[in-house]
Image (cartoon, rainbow, N blue to C red; front, top):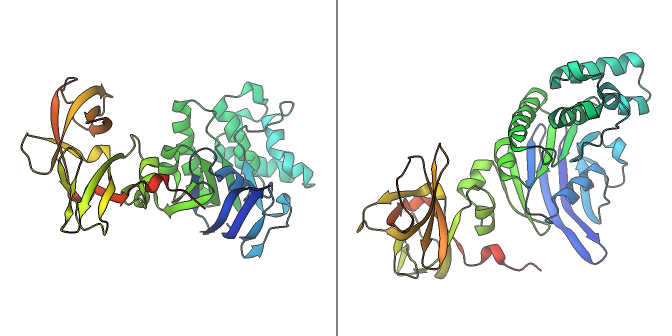
Length: 357
């Protein structure tokens, strides 16, 4: 297990700054997920840790040792790619043993380490098969086994499940989490899938435009996002955003443009127009005339079996509410929704769209 430290790390391609002054500490045995929209720099950052991209400025430390100019194979880490990158002419066992062969390992050592990794990953029946004879999930496990046999101090994963179908992704997520619980190897994992991030991570790092927006446990980020960008990026369906006004005279009440008011648990410290975030599951249906309730019109009702998702319209914008009950509502029907004050998040207006220098 290794610690990984990024101190003021930046990366530029010519005049374009892709990674901007990143500071991040990853502890021994931690499973850290880097997440953000396409182009935010998460894969570039991972490749810099791996040594596949140079660092323009700042320092990368692994177990306290500066690694900026150390070759990838000497960093003590293994990387699993999105494409698996298996050799088609080699069997599963030969693919897994390839790095050991390059290192000059004996046949006995290769057999022992490949056998151990195959047992951990459930690959023993497939060791003599070629990649074309394996399913997508089996090929992914072979790629993981190839990384595992090197006994690295840290694993790096670059969107390893994105090529799998939805059902197999769920299965492989569970297998990845079980593997980490067994090995406790420091793991840095890149994904654009928020469900992967929420279910796998000890800590999530949310990136945008090459900078860290917020770092914390999955539930810390979900319950207390630092800004509207983080709030809307994590969660499915996404957090709803409304524009409202708050006044210093009544800092506990937010007034929406149509006159509806909702309360918040404590003063936001803001004055004037604000952005209000409410998770879809925070709404509850109430009767007309209930204080601090929002009025809306039903647009679409989507029963999913375990829950009901309702698209609602308020003025000129749509938003989503989810309920565990099977609710019988019809398009065009008026509804009234209340939300507990502690579930209302207040952000600076346009904080999710602010420009960066």
